[in-house]
Image (cartoon, rainbow, N blue to C red; front, top):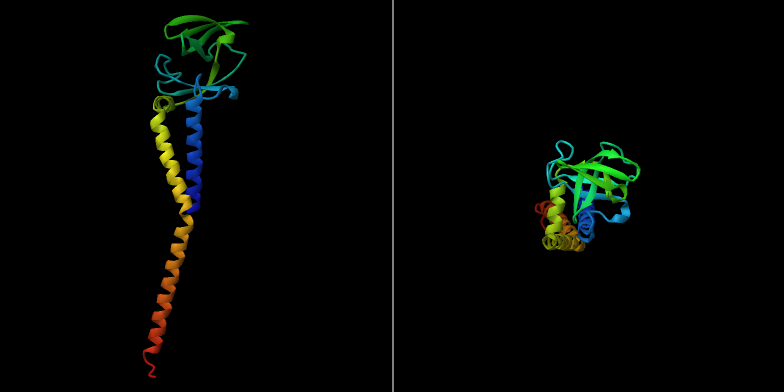
Length: 183
């Protein structure tokens, strides 16, 4: 059972390191661009029930956009999320908050295909507090390494303890058998 927990801990640590690396080294969103998917935090709740504030919007590049799709667009150095009102060959009309925005289809960073509730705020916190998160992960990694390195000595101590218990048991058993015998 210990091996299962150790394995799960190692996998979790690797996943945290991978997530942190993506968050730290990406500039556009929270995932590298070569993956052809993106992840963007929803910072305002103007999208009604579509995307709640604090969620993480997962996007994919989709050349065939249609009315009603939720898309991510760049706007003044920020990224905005809106709903497609009209989609023609190369132009879109997107509703962002209470305004309509006209954009080229090539400007679309991605179409939202899934949202993870509550994970957007977590990723923003990771991105804003990189040093603290790296320190915490370094401490976790050091603890995991120390745990793995000391496994042989702990195993040796357990074997020595078991041998001492066996010697004590058989010593007491021998003493019990020998107490009635006179030499």
